[in-house]
Image (cartoon, rainbow, N blue to C red):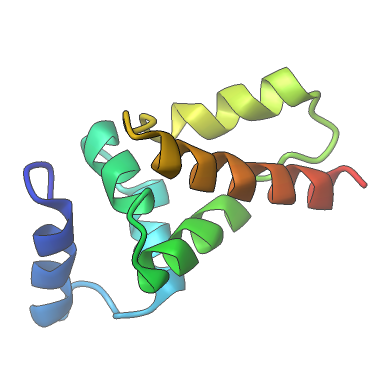
Length: 105
């Protein structure tokens, strides 16, 4: 997974170690100890529709209720490393903003 995130996830699915659902993959990325945080960010930032659904499921696992914006952002960014591409960062921050507003109306 750390070297080739897409192939790593596919390998886990093919060997029945992971279900091919957005929620299951998001849980794996969120709770997977020892996973490379850069690889998590690269996987979540992909433009593919399925990866975007995984990103939203991943963000749903975070609870931002009663946190100020800085605290919530720190918690979010602690779970992965932002990729370098601006479009990927934009998708991830958009998902964060939606979840933050949902938790703090």
